[in-house]
Image (tube, rainbow, N blue to C red; front, side, top):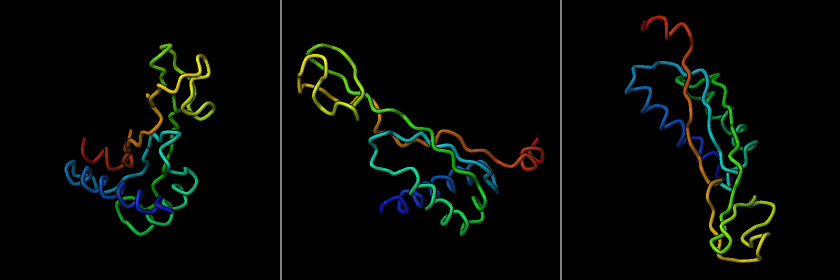
Length: 122
């Protein structure tokens, strides 16, 4: 299970962003996760619960995972199709000349801080 390592990487990135922006607490993190990224969402959230509890910056922070559906492009017929359903072979023309357009992403989309911290800065 590499999800724990992924969570530690996320927390490292959050610590850097927090330090650069004088943020002491994070209340919510939204990730965009590609359907074929090899990260299993429920393992990720389980690891998040364990690891975030051990870090003051993100203790109690909610992790929201937004899926990005995998889409493949066929170079021969120029059409797009759902990757998970059809794999590397184009369902329209049978070509194997295809490549992944999206669905492998792993992006920290949003970081939220508690309201009381926002008010202190304002």
